[in-house]
Length: 293
Length: 318
Image (cartoon, rainbow over all chains, first blue to last red):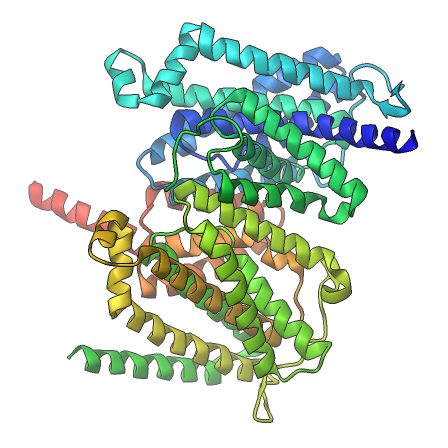
């Protein structure tokens, strides 16, 4: 019985982190889909989401308002980032684009350090601290918020991509930019839009995780890389695949840190990444946009 | 003709090194030049892989780290001769490169980038976590200076000659690899792997070979770092350093052996120059990375040349 409770505890913590990885991974997959760029600054949007919501809340705004404003602000930043850093380098090679986005990430992280310093800031959970007890294991209300809102966002994203004209235009631009342009879709606008959307998902992930991990200027890099692992593991193709990849990753990490050693927790993600790339490069689910030989 | 040219270059290079080594004031500049030399060695190897064979690696800091820790641990903890420790590091790196390279080099483009990135981070975490062996996050101290046949490279200046002699040797080697049948085959793979295959080039084997060679360069550089600084820490071998190495290659110019010198020098000196800005150092570094890549995606040398030619042509047009 105790073993079961312990196991459940790992699963809960894995699901919580996994949902966050999934949200961040969705940011990667949205941009990769529209532009075939891997945006290494994605993790910094997560960090900004967390720190901005904490900042607004400290100003005295109510939590929902602070959250909404933070997501909007970071979304605008994502749009600006695309305009200033990505669009001028449209014809650059993948290697140059990797360096550009890494440079952007370094820049954002540096600015956050100048602005907020190296301290960690806290944010109260969305609804209370009292944990629920399920079969001997505990789960925080914030974890339920994270899982619920992640689910909502994924369903919303899928609905948007498949059901609205804007979403369809975005997909069309990613499948075949030339054909999309021929039917009157402004591809460059779609690219910029994808950066905004992806920044919004990153910011939401950061704001959701802030009450659990606190907000620090350097929290983004590792979270970004984990989200990236989630996206590759699930296959960059499908939204549900990415979130499932994130959840798998979160649970694997929780089990590894509980049963083996917490020091290697971060290595688990990358080990799974390598195994997936070597044996099933299109990801566990989905076809993947690009087959390898 | 070409041979005479090369000997002249070699002579000039040695002359410059000897001059710099004997004239440089103070240990600061010697230490900085040592670091530049060490970075040049890695970048020379990485440029063979990226510039000539067209394969990216976002994990080369790992091989740098393997070499550094192999040399550091074997000489300091187990009192092994530095030369043997260096050789052990090379063997270890080659072994790891083969193990990782066989599955990874089947991948292309972004997927190869992701795989090498994952590999690099795993090695960085292992260096941190195996603290009974590596000293953990706080680093590994007390590495003796390099020695060869009883002669100790104790002073920074002796270290300088050691590092730059290796730079000279590897420069010579790289120039020869590029001009050889192997170099031509690599360029063929870069331009079109399918065409290269059709011409009978065993692309998979050659990619692996050059991946291992570049890992050996990095491992050797790591050993030199361990012996010249006497202290190593895992933070020097992480993801950010891998990115920095790739940036050195691109800033210097892909497929340009001499560009590797420029790229390594610029990106090693830049943080030193930016240190006056304290907290803003990182911000400015990120900004420079972005601006250079956006406006001079083919590297500093060729980018500036392109700009100049463009202006000349514009003038003539009028």
